[in-house]
Length: 229
Image (tube, rainbow, N blue to C red; front, side):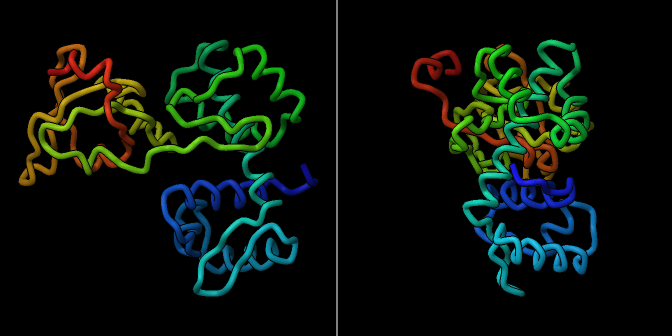
């Protein structure tokens, strides 16, 4: 990886992750994601464009170049491997690992990250269900559908959850909504802005839409569907 400041690395990672959720990565979206002013974002995007890491035109959004994407994927690989190591080996809970990995992702070398990968058996996903980029710099596709989009009667599974907010993760854990948890949407309550789910373990939980928007879903594998009926 090029010798880049932590701030530059954070921008590249944020642009990549925002692009996974929206085709256009705006200045305001980046500012909200990174907790900085829009003016700061504009200045950094111009710098990244000069470094040929980002393609940027005012009011048109930002996109990573191939070089920028390669660096972003390496940082994300470090982050997600560290999260899994902290949880699997060091006993951290899933709501603690994101903040720790944010600090450590910049410090570890590529060789160190590969040692973690070997130790953990070359894992494919992190504790929150997010795919771990391969060592070749490829990122498997991840669902963009959230639980808010799920209609009554749908049989679905949790693929991944947003990991930035520790309180959100604790609330999801209390409801039993972990990656690979399957469920049926029993009812959708527009008045309450919530929905009731029947989980594969037999539990029924009510999930507010404000929480459901943090849960990304996928269709139930054919072999698991009969257990939910």
